[in-house]
Image 1 (tube, rainbow, N blue to C red):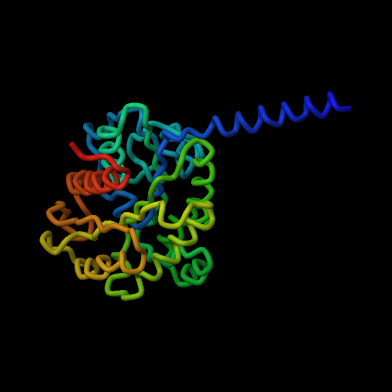
Image 2 (image 1 turned 30 degrees about the vertical axis):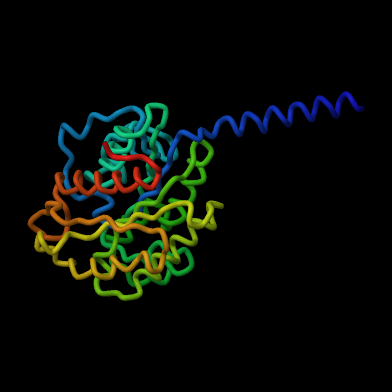
Length: 280
């Protein structure tokens, strides 16, 4: 009996060691969520389709046309959100990181975003009420995430935690909440839920929030940037990524491809500094 117990104990240790070994501390995971500018509204170009193999995306939906299946890792070639979305800040965020980080570190992103949504869509306790009056086109997008984008983000994040370590959260949202003074509090609800649901340490996983199209580009929601700027007062340690000078398109709501590239680099440079690396 003692021998059997010893064998069982050894097997248990092997299994635990195997599980621990599968989580690579040098695989940095970043959660990305928001609305259309996080989805990526601009068409990506040929130069955007070549990517370092150290930069990967965890597919958030099934995309047969791309040969991708939800829940699997792939080289982070756009689109990074859904099957037919465009270039996103996450693209050049990840590229900036793998360019500057040591060669033994890999970067993975998870992008769950819904164009036109308010931040309320990611409130796990109140999203159903928000969807009650949502237009059909938004509901169609939400269906891609089985009706609950927040739950999909958490599902994928837990899957990613089996392989790597969550190092940060990227948010680009606010256009649909323009002039909503309670936006920072609503973002805090989502952030706190993510920290709790993923068993993360509060304050150790930075939140980076990007400005909407800037007034210097004629941004029609630029007034929201004053509210976005106050987020660190509600979520200590969060950072705001400036959109000043980031080129937009004729709708003055979405960034151009070059605008996404520049904004993504800015997210990346900020995250590098928070990780203790310098951009040089």
